[in-house]
Length: 142
Image (cartoon, rainbow, N blue to C red; front, side):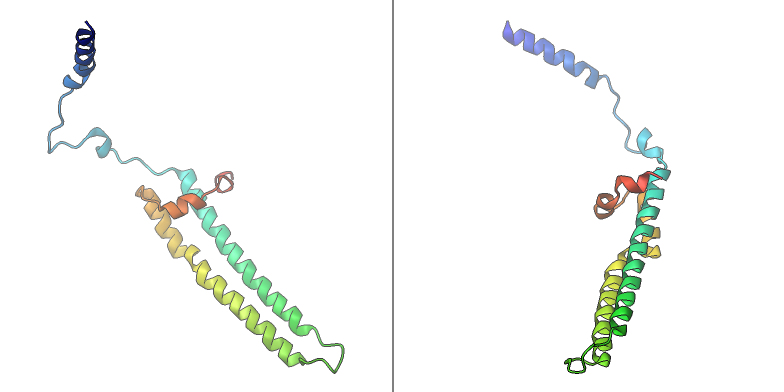
């Protein structure tokens, strides 16, 4: 009796699958023929992400130049100090140059050209996992 119930349940479950007509090889599926448009809020969020990262890059550069200028302007109070004013200027200038160089080399990832590429890849539904992880809720809420 158990085998009969299992056989009947299997036949009834397979009935809907057997009734479906197979798709012809040359005929595209209904979902493939309709290209879904990209969501405008996600594209706007991508623009906000890239703009925020570029702004952060510029603020770091301006801050390091400002810190170098303030450090250069400081003069040693005692003439017996080891470093002179020119030495301070060189040290702060080298430090600021290193910070700016690292900032622009690693910040180039968020350039306008890469932003256009990211939006194009999003519209083609191929946004990289790296950018998907960086899209936070704050970029959507505006």
